[in-house]
Amino acid sequence: EKLNSMNLLLYMAPIAVVLLLPATLYMEPNVLGFTIALARRDIRVVWYLSFNSSLAYFVNLTNFLVTKHTSALTLQ
Image (cartoon, rainbow, N blue to C red; front, side):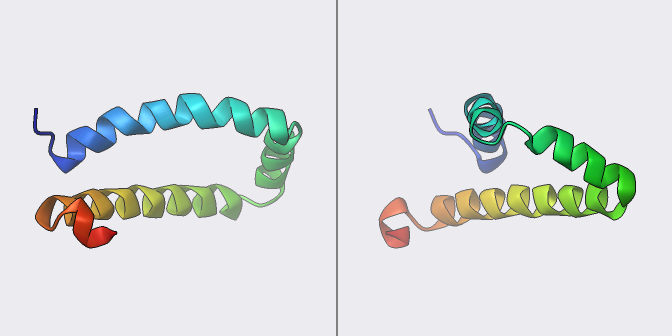
């Protein structure tokens, strides 16, 4: 079955969250408290995280689109 780029990203993103979030919380146990404390001191941290996640989304989407229009062999 052929998937377009948006559907592929839709299926891959939740799987990545389920796999990576527990690993992150295990390897860096105090990261959530540190991030919340940092966001309370400076609201720009929330904007930086939002901008960073938006860029990551567009990088993944661009990667899928380039792979679709060329081929996986071209990227290798």
